[in-house]
Image 1: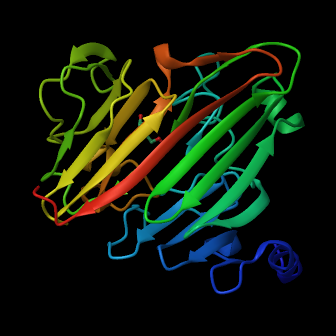
Image 2: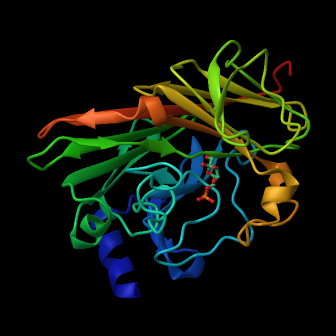
Image 3: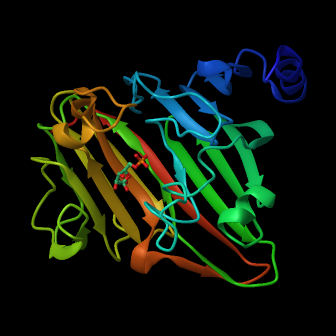
Length: 305
Ligand code: TA6
């Protein structure tokens, strides 16, 4: 990426004093939003939001200080997009974890204002590289609305002649005061697969408390989920549409130590709660059809926690 492309992007898309494209970490281009309602940063790499701070709130999104910033590698933190599979590809151990769209540059298609929000539209589509891993034709649009609330829409279109079956996730790393001192409400009574215990099916009893490495896929649930954070004195609320599964993940000390792009103690400042369609929630899409999953995130400050 060079200054010419930055200049061209800004000529086409910049909103003076509100939104511009600038060189980010590793020289990767990012859209920088500084509106009265919120500030945010979205990298074209993976169409990945890495920061959202609504006016009057502290930063809501966690970003590792040890993340890699290069083509072909995922950013650690923010909101990675997992598509067209989640975790390892079931029939190919060599395939990239969480699919292949979070490690490539997406195309910036639009940057507009809607009332006091800024809407960023990014897209990617199948190509010779993607077909090496997954022999289907698709177009993916990620539309992000940055305002007092954060809205993420992931729209999958089948542009080919055969139906395809896919998984997807908006793998949100929420920034928390202390992962050992919070509760995650909204999943009481929901069945989940515990990926830390041979994916055994279990039943959630009460709020989710993080007391060890946790990697749960909650099934058949469209419920809102709240991270209740007594340290930062706030609740982060996730509402979702067209999403049948919710993933809760924290690597804890032992798994964090295995991640070169996550500081050994950074696990304490993060809690992943992910709108998704994985496992039994995976989607089959006919040719010419599209599927839109939406996540809405907002912060309630100084609430009774
Ligand atoms: O969302 C939970 C999870 O699937 C965990 O199993 C863990 O692998 C995490 O994603 C991080 O995956 P990544 O490939 O980004 O290291």
